[in-house]
Length: 172
Image (cartoon, helix red, strand yellow):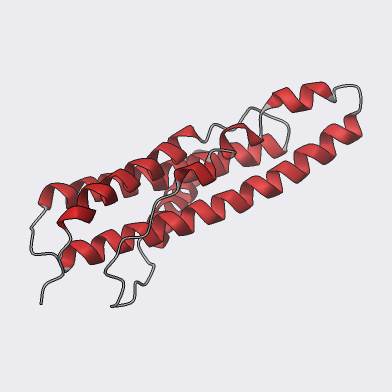
């Protein structure tokens, strides 16, 4: 009985993480693109560059003498960072769906791009889950949050959109 309990206790976090990853993956591909959306939206990765240093320990080190200020600043920045995460997730999902829409209505068949999109979607969902876990630990005072993989995945999707944009010619 103790062995069964131990096995369940050991596998439960892996199952929870797998379910969370799959829900993130599903959410990323679920945006609806209207039929008139023949033009790909711009992927403005510069909008998300502040995320790279928002949770930096450099600013917290300046306030090391005041634990209350450090706690307040950490809490405020975590809230701002979560807002950035929501926005980048929505923008990524919209861009992904717009690319799929453009590919489906294009006269040019691009199986290589379809495969790359799937890989990028997995990469982005993984980075998002990893960051959410790191952010939870960071809010408890442990570790740091590195979102460079997430911002890079968004940038790569934007690059694919730029490659596809000249070739987009909706089918008549």
